Image (cartoon, rainbow, N blue to C red; front, side, top):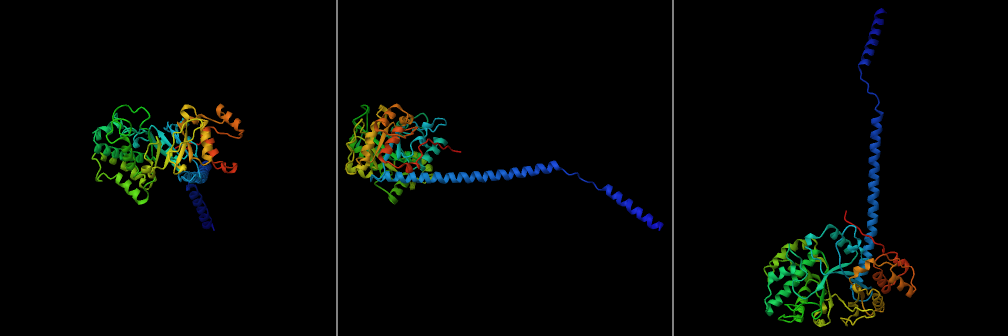
Length: 437
């Protein structure tokens, strides 16, 4: 009995000793709480990210649907059948600068079919800013087109500078000014090709030929396309230029034939090219290939004097932009065989804003295919509260206009193609500028 008691007490002592040897951890309530908070925060962030992505995807779907509607609308304007109006501007000031809304293409009314950068672009494709690239991308998504335009009097005009040397001087240095019929013809063809290469590399949509050989300050020097001392005569040289640039731009060629012409344009081994054309080909071919521009549709516009050989050249021309300026003037048409290829324009530079109303009414009567404005960017500042515009609204007994920018151009479009209030809700008249992320 005594031995059992001793054994029992020994076991108890051993148990107590073992219990004292076990290290116990206290409960870390703070640590557990922080872990729970961290996990909850991660879950909340994930939910917010998923919700944001879903909202952005839904918003993008709405933008895409809106862009598709605009694109289809403008495709009808190009069809030259009078179904939808062609709305156009000679426009300057594109730089897409943060804080300067009017410098963005996106500030232009969404129903605008096309603009021409009056005076050209001036920069190399590689020097286009990220803002400009994105702005052009959005403008294209809306179905709108961008052209270059200037008075075409000499070969080399409008080509970009390289360093401190302007493009015009460089062209004359490379290809000379030999006054022979053969050399003059060859230079007109080279100019057409180099200009096309440059426009394509920039991601633009074609060229607007402003040909006024007997108007403007062309000087008394050597002008291939204007009154001067050209050997072939400016009419023949312009025909040569259009026949060449018309391989790449305009309506004469399409499908596989147009694609082959575009491929040839960027083939430095193509027979018949001047050796120095390789400079533009090598510089601009990467842009051509990256943009897959062989699949793109390019247009050729014409404005200027009516002495163009329309019978010879009309098959190339997509639209005729008439310089029929004046308060109550429409026409005469540059091309009478299809009135819808003609666009009547107003000279906003001289303050002739209200004349666009007369021209819009003519377009509504199907006398022309659309309207345009010279220096249309000036209209950016015109709202429905502008004194002259308010006077027009009162005169016509019109109510409910809430334009904040481009009031005259917006009103002209509305006159030509009136839509119900329900239809208009799909068009965004407020200024929306989307920027690259």
